[in-house]
Amino acid sequence: MNKNNENTNAFLIHISAFAGYFFPLGSIIAPLILWQTQKDKSQFIDEQGKEAVNFNISYVLYTFILGVSAIPFAFNSLFNHFRHYNDFNFDFNFNGGHFFGFFGIASLITILGFIKVILIILAALKSKEGENYKYPLTIKFIK
Image (tube, rainbow, N blue to C red; front, side, top):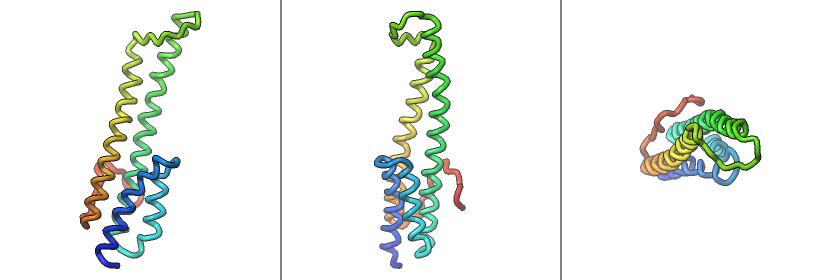
């Protein structure tokens, strides 16, 4: 396989992570399928495919952990509201600081999403140029 085709295939593997915006777990499934079909053709494609799949699995794990950590804040603020107010006039009075805990975690998830988009674009552009890109803070599930 010539170098231009290798670079293009690695680019497509990285960019395919945006499939996650169209169907559930697409950010893992699409790069995984592309990598599995192309990994035997080139060492560069194999390395970049592993990197893309590992990054997307890591990102889903980080987002899941942050999302689960927001649940206690949400339930606590909801239950405190019903404990202090016996009527059903739900006025979103978050005086206990739980409002900021819940939205603070939601803000972290949003920032993590922006970072994901930037890193995917950066990795795709670097691989298109033939550079071996390594995502930061990626757990190596596939070695």
